[in-house]
Image 1 (cartoon, rainbow, N blue to C red):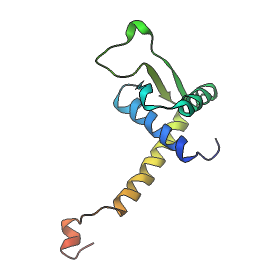
Image 2: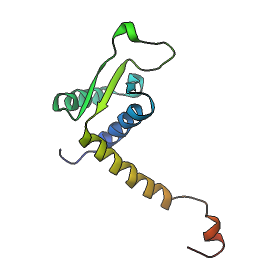
Image 3: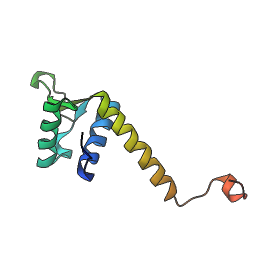
Length: 105
């Protein structure tokens, strides 16, 4: 897979969150036209499987009429992206640990 754009990274991380925390359900209201196009492209490539949930199984208490399932490659890339984001966010924090306050590392 080629280098992902910022938008593709964002979509992959959205799918990873939905797959991990929401049982694979995806809320299409959080996606734009380009996201749907990319999701269909990834589905055909087997990178992230994506489709609609059967209408008989839709639940009004659960947001999301779509589903996704990440390939092992997609999971690995999402994991790397999360690690990079965690490092960036840590460096931008506006608070100190107790150890930093006391002069330690």
